[in-house]
Length: 386
Image (cartoon, rainbow, N blue to C red):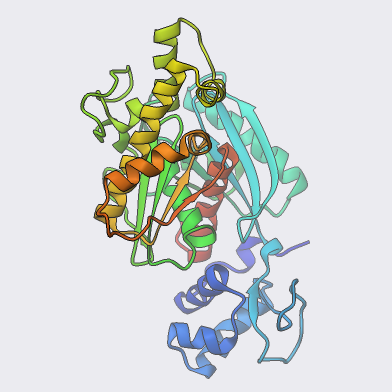
């Protein structure tokens, strides 16, 4: 049985700094931690002692694959005990709630999903409660919940607006806390995904990187100076007005030629259905394009050129060390990679450095993992939402 989260919270500012440094960069020697945080050896010893005693940190053998507890060996590196705490993460879509349980290092150890039959907040909270109860049966020490969804949120607790759910000013964190008894964090799903990449994923250790997501919509997030750049526009759906080709298709979602109208999965399906009278899945459309079917090849080619243009624009203006491409629409890269690359080159200076692009094949559980990372951040940082 692991210690409950209450046994190690709240952490002092100094303890939080040590915990975060080891969590996001560890395992680290005491010398490295002291240097990174500009601490004396005595101060570091004072800060790490309660973290070790609570089971949050552990001394590990030099080069060991797994942590093993040792006593009185201050020269040994320190690492986070990943399994000491577990967190639930949820991603709410228009028709499903996807759930995961992660360790303190955001490794997914369980998955469970349930359909939504209604967008009424009470009904959605019931689904979240049911999933949480399923998780608690296997992980009774669950430390907290993080929820990501499309839309704007404030104070990491209230959903100010979510168009696809038809919500305004829904105190989601409070409602879920009342039904589960666990602390809850709520934020925009793209913001959550960016935080997951910043702490544990492709952006770990980078000062400046961008995340571009393609799927039901188009999402964008930027990390600068090692921190996510948050704005009042988070969750408004930048892709709807991000014009890529003013002569592009007119679809029900997004402005003509916008990133969403060219790249959004519903828009791509709409274009094919309007042209053929048949309703194909996104995967079927990609397969048709790969086989050279003219209409599918044209639509996917336009989407690929739009994606390449977006990647080039991000590179030109944000100058990131890396761009992470994620979302359920990334199969486009496999089918139309050359078109994407050509569009990147066409919109970059001939002598510009190649774009460092990392494509992550992901599903909705990766988005849910982002929610769990929100909970990890808030609990480790000691910044509550209630």
